[in-house]
Length: 378
Ligand SMILES: *[C@@H]1O[C@H](CO)[C@@H](O)[C@H](O)[C@H]1NC(C)=O
Ligand SMILES: *[C@@H]1O[C@H](CO)[C@@H](O)[C@H](O)[C@H]1NC(C)=O
Ligand SMILES: *[C@@H]1O[C@H](CO)[C@@H](O)[C@H](O)[C@H]1NC(C)=O
Ligand SMILES: *[C@@H]1O[C@H](CO)[C@@H](O)[C@H](O)[C@H]1NC(C)=O
Ligand SMILES: *[C@@H]1O[C@H](CO)[C@@H](O)[C@H](O)[C@H]1NC(C)=O
Image (cartoon, rainbow, N blue to C red; front, side, top):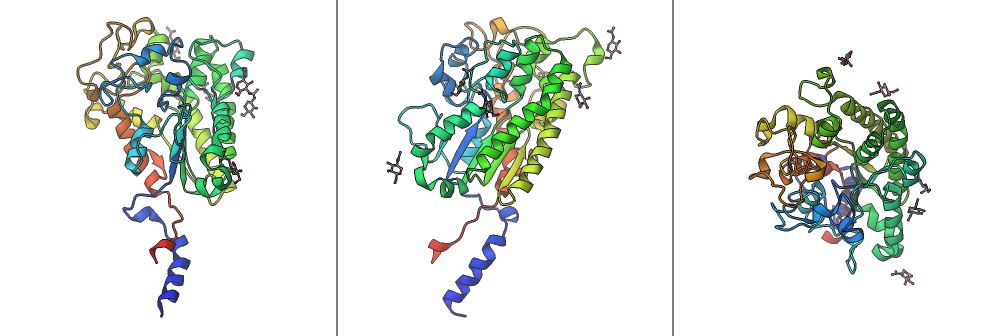
């Protein structure tokens, strides 16, 4: 066989090969991310740095573990998206609202406090919250669509085919705003299918624009998070599970994730060429809380914030992390939770690893095959 024939032979085989069994790292040409304070890498710091409920994120000790200064990330260090970008060979993905940035290697549209549902939903239901702004998922996708001409202009489909898109954790804020706004658990539960449908349709909107590699994240167990344990504390012991988490809020999360997982399966049928990964916040947090020492966290602190004040969860809205005189624990890497709501650099690292390699994503990101013809190898 001559060289050309050999090459043709290879070319025919390659589309059917899967990277799953190899140790190669997929080569994406860009990463685009959407989300809320679990993913925001500086957008809120640009849009509304003095917003109530946010300004304290711009004070130390936020950022102390990795950046040595507050960056607008609601953690002591890096977020899941930062770790994934690093692993895939990217530097930090710039916040989409940053001026004068080159977004051709990616942009992070996530912003603090975001919801899946539109702002108008909360207005119409008379739900107010200082963290609530008009920055819902559909607004972020609109930002993305408006930025497209400067990202890829006439070659977007080509560009997106090899980009990684991540729809971060949407839904937890929707449910918490409703609960803080006095809505019943039955009301909240009745909105779960609507929230999930909103996320599904946002994913579909991206897939219709040529996106081929998409990560869709589920919600966390809200009932294990210090802010919820504090604000919705119950005197009835049977409201708590064996881990000390509030069952009813976790059940909302389980319901949401079950519906979202089905929605992802439906999208895979609708877009058979696209690779869609369902990624978890629920399972890792339950794993950490169930067996903290296995993951390097100090046993006994698993439901406490590292940075904060107040008993028994070290959380108090009026004296939370970033307020003057509020201390952080001496070693944040031994804590799961950073500020009562978001997680530590250490916890996000384990979650990112589980999304890249399993077991916290299905399929793991490293197993997303990229159609990669070796045209330039000749
Ligand atoms: C929210 O922002 C979107 C997009 O910028 C805009 O179309 C919409 O009118 C805004 N909604 C409200 C209630 O301000
Ligand atoms: C997009 O491409 C068109 C046609 O090539 C060109 O006229 C236009 O200036 C480009 N726009 C941007 C924002 O680069
Ligand atoms: C929420 O609704 C679903 C579907 O109707 C139901 O199966 C589930 O028990 C409900 N959960 C709560 C916490 O009310
Ligand atoms: C609400 O969100 C949907 C997407 O779920 C979008 O199509 C619609 O334009 C939004 N409406 C408003 C009033 O922002
Ligand atoms: C505690 O909760 C359980 C289960 O929801 C309920 O059956 C019981 O009546 C509650 N007890 C009190 C004292 O309210």
